[in-house]
Length: 122
Image (cartoon, rainbow, N blue to C red):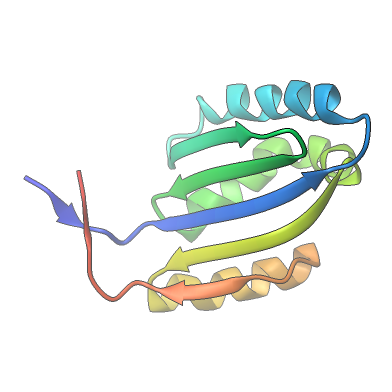
């Protein structure tokens, strides 16, 4: 039976700086490998074109998202130094949207926030 979608989803689109694609892919692979051990991370997918990295991330709640950041915090400065954020959309329920707004401010990232109105997941 499907359940109500109450997850946090994070969708960043980054432009990869010139000459950095190989390094970005290597670091993204490490982030994904670490995510396999995070119980609250439901989905973490990297997709590329010639100049961009798109991430599709889903977490069971804000605590799970924050736990993911803790897992990869030693990689984030290097990771973000090779990228330019072009777009960031965050989808969450009312309570988690407020928490994510604060977290994004701490990270220095501007996002578009969409509050879940209705939906389901497996």
